Each structure stands twice: as structure tokens, then as C-alpha cells.
Amino acid sequence: MYKNLRLSIEHKIPLTDEEWKLVVEKVKFIKLKKNEFLQIQDSNSSYEGFILKGAFKTYILNDNGTESVIFFSFENEWMCDLGSFYHQKPTTYNIKAIEESEILVISKTNKALLFEQVPKLIQFHIIMVEKANIAIQQRLIDVLNKTSKQRYLDFIEKYSHKADKINNRNLSSYLGVSHEFLSKIKKRC
Image: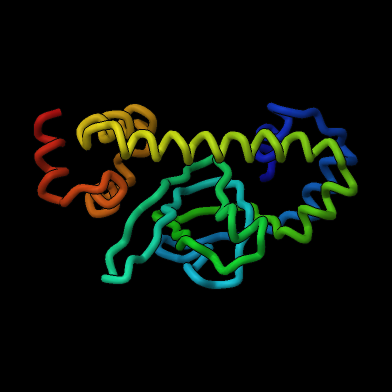
């Protein structure tokens, strides 16, 4: 069941079977139905997670009650509310399953223990944080410099295998456009 997690880690660093056993002991398997939350904004519960199956949206709920989707995450991807996880602050984002999902999560305490037991995982951690920072920066650059149409086309290209799982409400929120404008973009493409 955890094969894809091991492949993800070993894509960057090798693990012995004993080290892998320590990893498995520290992670927790969670199954979520569509529309169930992994994390709720302003709570004190934050995990780092690896998606085995399914899809998630990471979003904030604005003061006026609307959602602003920041990221979508799919199978074999990592996700985390970095500020909350690493600094033990209230969570910034809601993380919600947008389809039936299975995820492996680790708490900050268990991750720290794992670093003590398998120090080379620190190297993997650095690679993950670098990748997350690059993704966040790229998202910001895209929002500031690309048209809505270009962001839509980029999204469809990057997630061609999952684009049909994202409803128009979530996609328009991610792109920062109205439902009507998203419909116009789709008609032109």
C-alpha cells in the first residue's frame, strides 16, 4: 500500500528495509470521502501528507465567505501547510478532499523523531521544501504575469489526467476569475 511513498523518497535518496520500516511506523493512513477535510483553517492540526489516491484542494475562506483556491494536489504529490506545520501556528488553509482519497500523514513530532532515527531523510526534507518554495513562487509569478487564459491552458496541460475532476467553481477560484469568464475561456480554447 505504501509503495508509492517509498518510490517518492527513493527517487531522491536510497533507503534500507530497516529505514523504510521506521518511516512506515511514523506515518498514519487516513481515508477521506469527497468533501471531507484533512485540515480546517485556523485550527491547530497540521500534517505533512503524501497522497496515495485522490485529489485535494488547498484554499482559504475569505472574510466575505468566498473560497480562494491556492493549490490542487493529486496522487503521488506531497502537501503541507508549511507555516503551520513547521512553526506550530494555527493553520492558514483548509485542505479538503475533492474526491475519495487516501493519504499518509506525519506529524511534526514524528518527523523530528524520524530525522533522529534516519538522518539522511533530512536531505530528502530539504529537497521537498525547495520544491514547495519553487511551486509557491511559480504560482505567484503566474498570477502576476500570465493571463487567465494562459493560466487555464497551463493548468490543463499540467493536469490533463485530472482536469476533469475539478469543477468549474473550484477552477474559476484557482484562476481568480468568475464562472462566466471561465466559460468564455473554455469556449475560446
